[in-house]
Image (cartoon, rainbow, N blue to C red; front, top):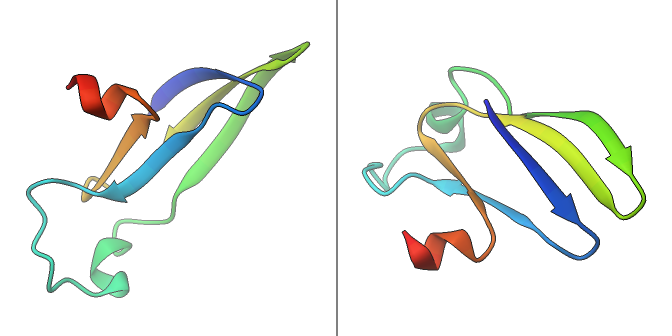
Length: 68
């Protein structure tokens, strides 16, 4: 699970991982379960959430993927 804080208008990206076989179907991508987003806290314009997704999917803070 990735735990991340986001402010107003900030985003996360969920997409196929870099090493994924692009011929996989949606059923293949989600065979290990769904994407689950849990809100842990909120304070003003900031939300702390956890994102759990199948291993075939990559989760990024928007903007962080360019730095990786």
